[in-house]
Image 1 (cartoon, rainbow, N blue to C red):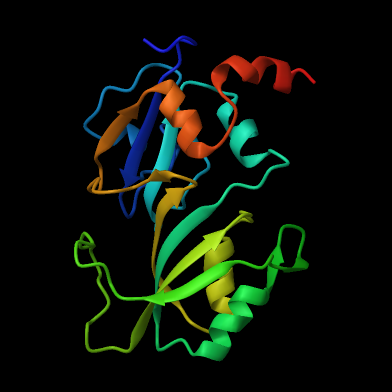
Image 2: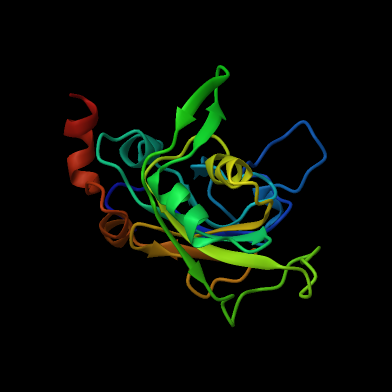
Length: 210
């Protein structure tokens, strides 16, 4: 048992599942996964229903503030498949920042980020509605330290490349690894905070009360 009494999980969120346990709509929910989560479990940082990959679940309500509302930025890495071939000039645009529309209808220039062209991973799990292999496409590995609403999809639209697959593969040193879609892995508390490079549970109370 963790000292705080809280529990921490990593899942590989499948395509076409929302990052919620409850919804008024008829959608696939986290509660549909084959796992008995404890009461009070919630998602930390959502993925939209068409996005896949690493999603953190926990009973600790402080994690969202420590991870995504901290003054210290935390890296999030995504594997992205887009239609058509991305040029080196376009890669540089992404690295330097592109204009996207954010909440309130405001035009926002994204922060500089790491972007590289990669080969399709050999062990990448298949997904429904795969892009036909004969159609021109590119795979990108993108690391951000900010997370505006649907930011990567908007960035891809800004460079006129439709985003076909979006898979979060890591947050800091916490990695998706070999987890298959729908699989759940529980993580010990100390390792959870160390991998995410946020404060340990023992330090949380003093920080959040400041």
